Amino acid sequence: MTSESDNAINNQKPTHKPRPWVDLLVSIIIPSVILMKLSGDEYLGSVMALVVGLAFPLGWGLFELIRYGKKNFIAVLGLISVGLTGGIGLLELNAQWLAVKEAAVPAVIGIAVLISTRTRYPLVKTLLYNPTVLNVDKIQAVLKKNNTEAEFDARLQKASYFFSLTFLFSSIMNYILAKWIVTSPSGTQAFNEELGQMTLVSYPMIAIPSMIMMIAIFYYLWRSIRRLTGYSLEDVMAPHLADKVEEKSSGS
Image 1 (cartoon, rainbow, N blue to C red):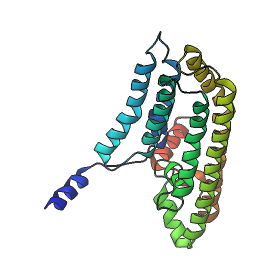
Image 2 (image 1 turned 45 degrees about the vertical axis):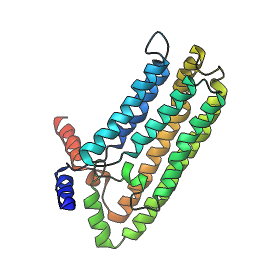
Image 3 (image 1 turned 90 degrees about the vertical axis):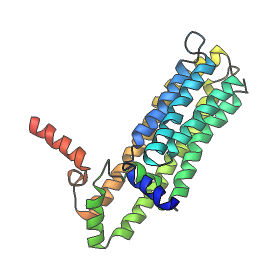
Image 4 (image 1 turned 135 degrees about the vertical axis):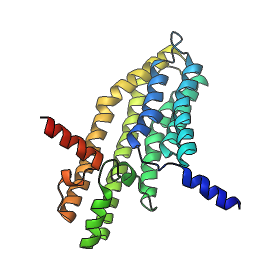
C-alpha cells in the first residue's frame, strides 16, 4: 500500500532536465562572489555573507530534491565549498588551509569525474552529452543503426579523462594562486580583500584556460559524433537550440 502511494507521488513529479550551467551559477559562482565581495563590515559582514552564500546552494539543492526528487551533486559541492571558505575566515584558521581547500575542491570534482566513468551516469555525459545541448535520441538511433555505440562510449570515456584533467589543472593553479596572493591572517579585512583579488586573477589564469579545455573537449566529442553518424553540428543540436538558430537565420 505504501509503495503504491510512493510510486503515485513519484509519478506526479515533473521530469527533471539537467541544467549544469544553472547549477554552477547558483551553487558555486553566486555564493563565491557574495563571500568574496560582500563579507566586509561595510557590507554584509563575515557571518551574514556566509549565511547568504550558503542559502543559494542549500535552497537550490532542496528545490531540486523536493520538486524533482533528484539529489543535486553540484549544489552539495557548492555548499561544502562555500562553507569551508567562510568557515576558514570565521574561525580565523591559518591561510594555509585556504590553499588546501582551493586545491581540494576541483581535485574532488576531478576524482568524481573519474569515478563516474565506472557508473551509468558519467559526469561528462551529464554536462555535455545531454538533451539540453544535443539531440541525444537522434544520435543514439544512428549509433545503434551503425552498430557504433561501443566505439562512441569509448570516446565518451576518453572525453571524461580529458575532463578530469581540466580539474587537475584548476586544482594545481588554485593552490599556487592562494599561496601567492592570500597571505594575511584569516578573519581580517585584508584577508577578504585578498580573496577578492584571488577571484579576479583566477579568471584569466584559471577560468579562461579551463573554458578553452572544455571547448576542446566538446569539439572532440562533436568530431566523434560527426565521424560515427555523419551528422553536422546543426543536425544534432538540441531541438530548442536548433529552433533558435533557425529563427536567427530567418530574421537575418
